[in-house]
Figure 1 (tube, one colour):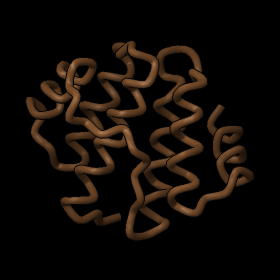
Figure 2 (cartoon, one colour; figure 1 turned 30 degrees about the horizontal axis):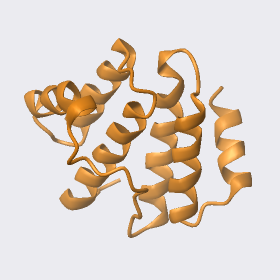
Figure 3 (tube, rainbow, N blue to C red; figure 1 turned 60 degrees about the vertical axis):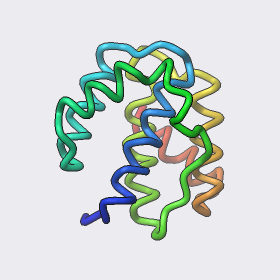
Length: 120
């Protein structure tokens, strides 16, 4: 899937916000985010710096991201659902954000529940 650069940035930001929700950045989350950032064509150092500054950076907005097409939203949700329990559990604050992003992109609760169930 080809994602325009502004949406790639929002995609990455959305996942950064997700891993910040429980105030702990696990090594598995960090590795996932670096690999994903490189897949999105971001420089590795940019990704590392974004992750390192994440907990103290007030400029990363926490609002749910709305994408221009549902396929990008579904792709983000798939990555987010895989990433959220990388530290050993799906934190209630992470689940809350997943629901908010799904709602913002017109993905209903049944779709979200099925996606979560399929990845566990």
